[in-house]
Length: 149
Image (cartoon, rainbow, N blue to C red; front, side):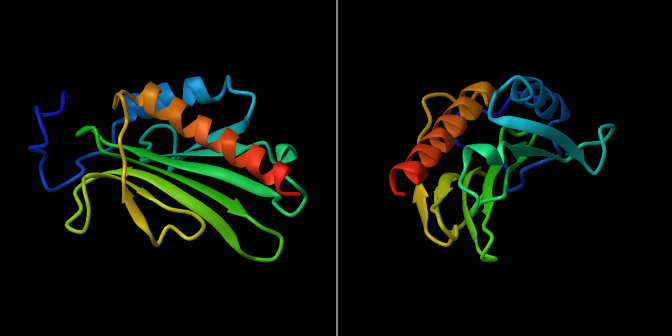
């Protein structure tokens, strides 16, 4: 389904875009940072793609790292990055495009808690371009973690 021109989107994200979720899954499984993928609730009717990231790339204090990806037929999406720390805390951020009365449709929930929201800009909203930008930001996060130790 092609999105309407401009920013005249409906007030709903619409149904899951299963074709895009499967496309992203195919690309993510070939990325060295990814250790596994899983569709929720199942591969036949996926609503979300859960992506496990290689915790060996992080310090021992971050044993679980994942991405939760939702993509919709309207072109809206949510990509949620989550680090589970051994002290019980989480460090997280989220790239979103969806109807929102409090900010622009395309926005970023700042780490470490996602409470602060800023406008976001992508050169392209093609799923593979968005995926590439997000993985680049995750690589920068990993580099900053190691440089701060």
